[in-house]
Image 1: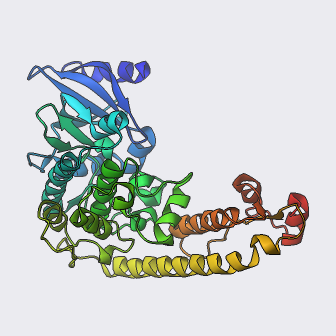
Image 2: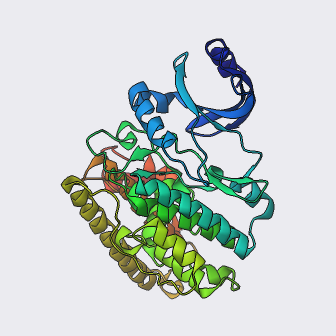
Length: 399
């Protein structure tokens, strides 16, 4: 992005020499720069414009101070921060190595001992942050950096938020989703503000599963479909994909990836112990992070109810449809056609995610049945809020 470099160079010329873009994601662009005072390479991360507007300079500085206070051998530290030409940025040491994502693209599956070592290093770093009231919210292979000496560094604490800071609006309330759908915990995907250590436990469990199996435990075409899959059934067993994985690792993954936070490890330190000690019990206890507000508890109860209803509804749907649409009941040679219209969300706006996910999940179950043809998602979703009757829609879609 040459224009970004040109906008930043005048304001940073006395501190940094900007060289080139080295990475870009939905939340930030990363530039390679030279720290002129200390004559060292640094990674200068510039927040995306939409995210910067939502966060604002004051809140950004508070969060950067939280990140800068995290000093641990496996945390990539924040060195500096500022606002230049309307852009919010911070710097970190430039790592001579690669990200875990780079390694997975090349190798797909990692040796078991190597995958466990990476997960333990990351877990210890995250435990250190959690003990100081900071959660990461975006643990993924791109944010785990591997140095040439074999160490793992957790990066991108620059936009982390202190646990329990429920007095301020979260980024999700301004339309910004902090996190990556494939690695988000169900409660984070549902828009929960009062997240605790267990959301990072889930994300790191997903990363470890991917290192061992070659892909995340859940995949899907949309974020809503991913959210629904997490609630539809049992956590996938990694030993079915890779039988050489020790049983104690599979038990730890099943606990870390539990859909409900209460069923996971209570702390990241417990997760780390379960990975390093085959005899450690894979049991959870209440998280020892700052207490949740009453509003947060109420919302967590609401989310748990949504999860339970979703699981029961999908299970019942599978039984009912399996009986009604078996091959011997299909008449004629042409399959029956059916459209799944988008569910209407009658609850809080930030729970619309589950209405979309439930729609996708039901559409997927129907499409898998023999003798039944389900209209495409795009065809059905065009009728959201159209005000037409089911009969009118049926005639237009020929179902």
